[in-house]
Length: 394
Image 1 (cartoon, rainbow, N blue to C red):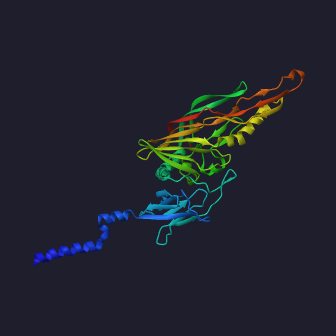
Image 2: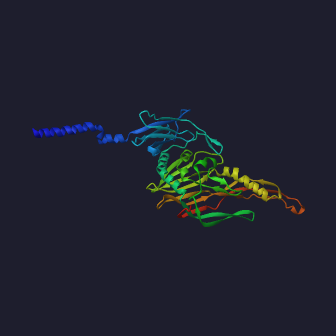
Image 3: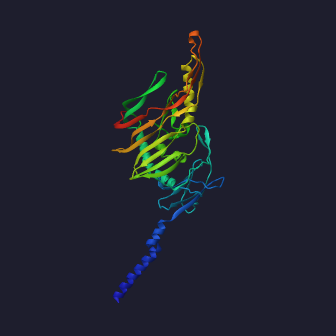
């Protein structure tokens, strides 16, 4: 009798356990629970059309990105459920972003309203979209994963307690025989920053180039803070590829933004998620040079050749290869930092097509005419390598 009671008691305990745990304790049901998805739709709030390639982020505490995806051709998205998630954030280029807290009253249909995106006084239409595709989704997801690294690099690029001792090679400009000559000048320089960059707040206004004088401009690198920002994500299209163990994110500007110089390029990410290299090319150079650099170059030529009565200028010839790269590495005690970089800008010089009138100066008259052709010519690259970090003296 006692033995039967013990057996019955065991059976009762097992039955109570099964009732308490329920059917979700079975392996198949557990897998189903993990595969539950949060689905939604993103529309243009006025046109009621699907927004393709809108960025949807699943946020945890302190707005940490847990997962992200892009909407498909129908404007739909799907994200795995996550107990850590507290909100969904949706954004698209040319539209106001919207964030909603997760909870019983959460609705997965988002209607974003178009807002004018103004760059250098030019309003850009919100209708332009990137081509959708799985590589876009993979690229944005990988970009999300390296965003904390980019933010750490941004902090390490300009530290209040450090000077960056760089082996710095820059072009030295001299005027000789009627033209500018450039020769590399290498020296050790202590800087307060690892690389000259464009602040996020200035990107829309000035882009990545600024006029210095009648023949050169300052070409700047994208800051790590900019590459981690929503401004970068919303103004560029993305692609994804692999090259052995290296994963590569490609990016390019979404649209023509007036005379502002933009960038296209790539991120190289190692197998352990380490950001190794950022490479870029300057885009939209010719409008910038024609609007800003050439007028100054022409004014300088008129002043330099004041003996001519008439000076005419032929169209600009593009002869430049521009761009740059940043190489990143882990520096002991400090973490990921920019350890090497190069920036290749351009200068405007004579591109041939010169014609001169008869020399009548001996008769007390000026030269009759002069025809010049401005050309975008490649500038010697500015390069730097991090040699040492030293405490900054107050």
